[in-house]
Image 1 (tube, rainbow, N blue to C red):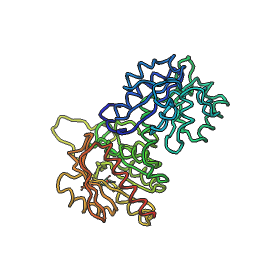
Image 2: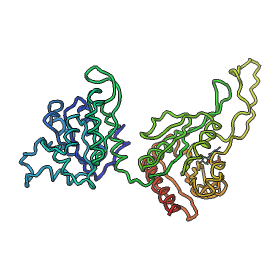
Image 3: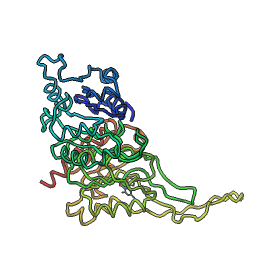
Length: 413
Ligand code: CTP
């Protein structure tokens, strides 16, 4: 996760980062760095045990603020650190959260500043995210599982644990999430939940149409826009399935991914999934044609100078077909098309929207976006044209998801 990708994501946000005792504290140092790079102000609060694993000096240097370790810290004028710290927070993240700390929360105990401020937080205003970190037996213990259920019922969001090698030499569940994963969880938690209850299908990336076992026809689509949309939709609370052509991009957290290669595979997967989807966003650059036949073996140069003659047949138009399905026509499936053009953006987009029969078409200049991290979009629907000016694909995806959510909820109202 690089600094450019996350710049501004948390601008204006104030995060309280709590550390309790655990070897995973080193990941929290990196997490703290990500938070500040994303523009958040970070107030670190550490328990006594946490200081055995990481010094407050390190966390002060990374957060740029003095760390709070004690309820009896005399710095606040009113001497009420637990109140002041919890009132300003947009979110409180405890990472690592030890088994003992979770037990304290479950009982509503307050014998250290961090537990005290969690108890004192306004539950409706300051969300509490807990990132457990412990040995696998401690994690699996019925007492811990009982406590985890209890704090979740009391309003905390308990993040998943990872499985793998543990500091104690054992292997299993209980590892804390990595810094980047914690960051994504926090971003998702803070995102407006505009698509709750929706099942969003996204196609992304290019397709690859085989000529023979070693060659094929593809295009320059990187899949970045579609992946960014899938991520933003998931953060907005949707259940998201991403049908991806051949790209080298990590699956956004929480998104279900189906990998395909050819247009026909993408067509099959999309038609199946669209049966239960409520929104379909077709960002894939699907090959319009494929070789009429795929040679069983590599086509060889025979030295005669003769070149192979390729014949093509048309691929199914996934978007047009799904947009004409009974569910889409009945208004149960909202379809969004993309148009990669090289000129006359608005006129081509209007024509394509009518041809594909979709309520919303998103147009961009293909050669100006393929492979890049930024883009500019034109949204064309019944109401007219909206321009989303040049920005990162991440930001455009968030704006587009908000636009789609407005239209979907408007249709449902
Ligand atoms: N699309 C699709 N299946 C295809 C071709 C395109 O689902 N076989 C979808 C794309 O995912 C996109 C929209 O249709 O959402 C428009 O794609 P684009 O390539 O711009 O348009 P084409 O229909 O191929 O028209 P043309 O290439 O002539 O501009």
